Length: 446
Image 1 (cartoon, rainbow, N blue to C red):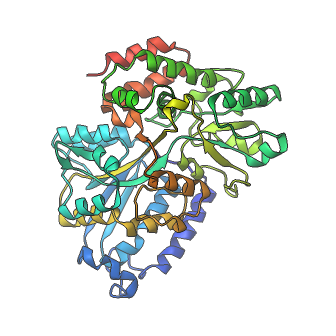
Image 2: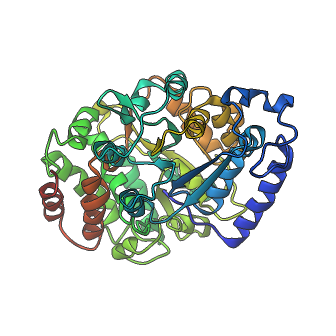
């Protein structure tokens, strides 16, 4: 998802970009740097001479994250002579199909929804990756990640960034002062919530407003809970319509999530009552933790990017995160996550070269060094991951014992996962009952 930032943060990112640009192979813009033959550029020789070539990219990545994205491939541009022209949009999910249908598709798009990728494949819009990209992706990612964009036996895009969503953010300083302890079970989580509420503080803050993508943070709640109550196998059946959207197990999961999200005693610290969740932007939703107006915020690893400038993210810092607790011990400790995939609408050689580079270990480590980013790339060195929550996330993603499941709404057909499911969660927060919401979403699945 896209990320909002302050003007001050953008200014800092701009300065950082200049510094990183100076440290790269040279200072070229859209032409190959004069240092292209240097040792720093040796790793890019395999991509060939791309001098003067241009590749357009489109995604939901905006603001400081877009600046960091540009920094991450700056050396690749300087050494090869290529230009990657990236555009980020808060209306990405809605506008990408419009652009494709209108004959104005980008060369590549960073698509977080495998369901949307399948829609483009079924429409004959996407190009399978080159043999070089496929080889690079198979060397660097587990089969579980590659299956999300393998359709009808063809591979359509390697992952770019990844994230772990099964986290609850909190303030270690506040917890120490109050004598609170991060919970390890659902019952402990509810007991802690009651304790915080009794102290006069709303325990939870939440927000699901995200432009055209409003509603997605609430879908993560039901997915995380369903994994913990029904288990990964039932989750897989639900995301593929092997069981109906309104199956009793799903009803139970949404009602359990509602014991927090629709509980006026628990929410919405710093913003208002339950309905304020629907109008609070996901970017701002956890910030009240830093001012003591709430204590807990369930959100993904990428929320590390959202804290105000100067916030220390560490086990002994201003904010940190703990694993969203298990509910049924028999279901283990599943992890919900997501990520973007680099899909191409054209197969020009320079486009394929960019896809191959973005699937490489060189790219993953280049982006990780800039900070606040996670990848499931097996060649990512943990030493290059500065943020402690990101280190924790990468460790989880690289652990072969992890029971990982991709974001359910992103796996579903786009009309459901990014359509009626998102909208249904907004209706649910605004007061519509669980059965009506789930029955309505089920009726739209084709």
